[in-house]
Image (cartoon, rainbow, N blue to C red; front, side, top):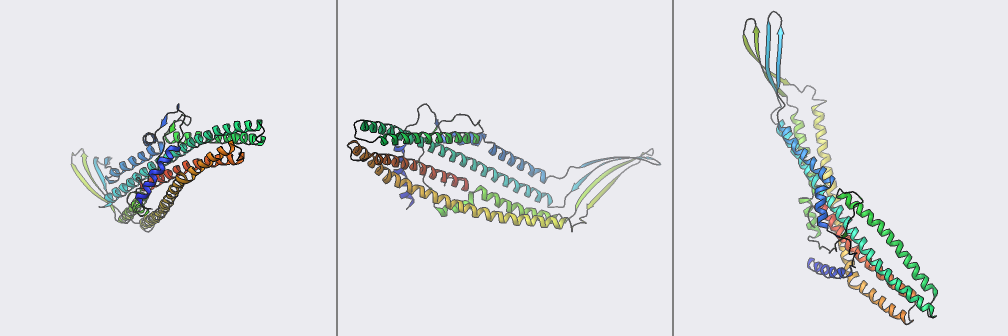
Length: 410
C-alpha cells in the first residue's frame, strides 16, 4: 500500500471511527493532550533533574580548562639573622592536558544533553500512551453503557414475551446475567481509569488523586516516513543513539588524556627574601618537575583503563543501535497491523455486525429468532466496537514510541 493510499484509508476510517465515538458525560471537562505535554515538559521531575545534570556538566567545562589555583608562600627563619620570605607558585600541567580535559568535559556535557533529550522524549511518550489508554477506557465504558441500555430493553421484551407465553424464562435470566457481567466489567474499567489518572498525575508531578477530565477524540495519525527513512533518522536524531556516540567520542579523548599523562607537570615559583638587621633583599626563582616515576602501575594502567572504556562505549553504541532498529521495526509492524484492522473493522465487520443485530431484533420481535441469537449479535457488535477503539489507540501508541526513539514525529 502506498503512502497516499494509506493516508486516504486512514482519513476514511477516522471519519467512521469518529461516528462510533459515543457522547461522554457532559459534566467532565475535556483533557487536552497538548496541554498535558506542555505541563509535563515544565514540571516533570525526571525531565527537570536531567536538565539540571546537563547544566552541571556544562559548568564543569571551564573548570577543567582552567589552571590550578596559585599558592601564596610566606616564611620566616631566624638563625644568626632573621630572614623573611614571601612569594607565590603556580602549577603548570604539560601543554595539551588542559585542552584535553576541557574536551573530555565537553563530551560529558554532550552526553548529558542527549540524556536530557532522551528522558524528555520518554516521559512524553509515556504520557501519550497513558492518555491513549485513558481514551480507550472512556470509549469502552461508553460502548458497554450503550450495550447495557439495549440489554435492559431486551430484558423487558423477554419478560413481555414470557408473560404472554411466547418466550422462555431463561431468556430473562440470561439478559439479567449479561447486565451483571457488564456491571462487573464497568467496575474493572473504573479501577483502570483511576490507575491511569494516578499515572498521568505522576508524570505531571501532581498528587495522584487530583481529578482529570475526559480525553479528546483521537484521530489516527499517518506515518510520515517509510521504514528505511526511519532507520536513517535513527543515526541523525535519535538521542539514545547520539548519547552512546558521544560516549565513544568521550572515550577517545580520555585515551588521549591518559597518554598525555606520561609527560611531566611543572610548578614555577618566585620568592622574595629580606634579611634583618642587615636590610639586604633578594629573590629566589624555582622550577619543580613532577616526574612520572611510577608509570608502570599508574600512567600505563590509566591508559589501559581509558582504552577499555572506549571499547566498551563502542560496543554499547552497537548494542543500542541494534535494539533501536528492532524497536522501530516492531512499532512500524504494530502500526501497520492496527491500520489494517481498523480499516477492516470500520468498513466491513462493524457495519455487518450492525445489520446482523438489526435483523436479529426484527426477527426476535416476530418470534423467528431465539434470544440467544439476538444476544450474541449484540455482544459481537460490542466487542467489535471496543476492538476498533483499541486498535486506534494501539496505532497511536506505536507512533508515540517511534517518536521517543527517533526524536521527531515519525
